[in-house]
Image 1 (tube, one colour):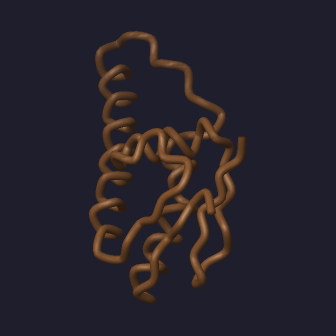
Image 2 (tube, helix red, strand yellow; image 1 turned 180 degrees about the vertical axis):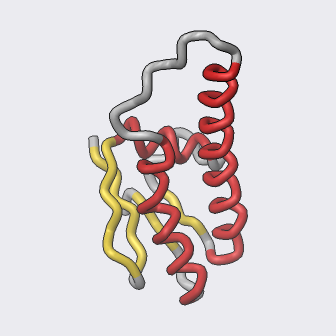
Length: 103
């Protein structure tokens, strides 16, 4: 399944369903096949995504500092996966428009 995030001020962001659901879970919208990020909610959503990226980086750093074997790095990191949606949210917030998915 593919999920397409849309905004009138940015190119569509298309994600595989599992990856999109991971990001939606990070912002408290897990399991929603359709939805909207309202303008007033966008800064908080960006903060949640940034916090998740920072937490992933800290966990990898902590594992390396502990001298243990670092967990296998995914082919696409969370930072890379979040970036297109994060940029769309920034642009949408600047232009005061919503971001929708699944419609």
